Length: 245
Image 1: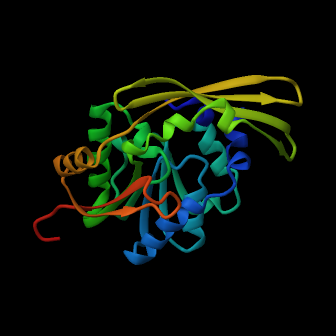
Image 2: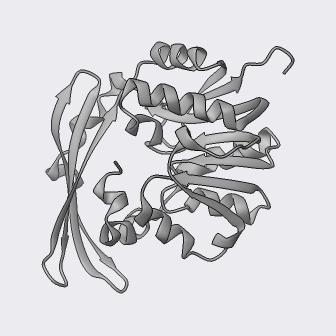
């Protein structure tokens, strides 16, 4: 099930305007060039920002997401016809042979169930050509970033074109070991409507991620620092393990 922020049409429509700075994607664009990837699988593509950036550069993109409302936003954007959009997730993909698979932003952490995570990694591997790479980020648990997810620190009011003022904030609702649950609140000034979206992220340790990748048939080439959150995130660069790759 996709969170309401991605699945509710009214929330999906304001997702990009509320977070217009996607500088975090620059590192992924750089890796597409670094690895000379001409075919990319964007897992958890959301509203299609990264997929469309790739398509603009002539990359053949398959973008998959379980939230139909987010995909509707993506499909309505200029250039969307250059992307293959799939309503679903990495566990049920059609036959593919891509050079690179990506999970940007919080996608990897949002897959909280261990069996679902394992299935996602196996699905990504199956979609990759021999020697192809999977890249994704995950936040460093020791930084305890969720302690800053409070109404006092995150509250803001944004004026959105065609929508009007939108008040929003986030607050943690539970911390259970590696699982951190939180609730986003949205208040639409135009009509007073209030919507909420509940999410949970799994904060995995580095050795846990490396073990999960190995079990799914990957070798970890390196673990990089996220340029937009130095010291706060690991960026895993994993290669599909094949005897002749």
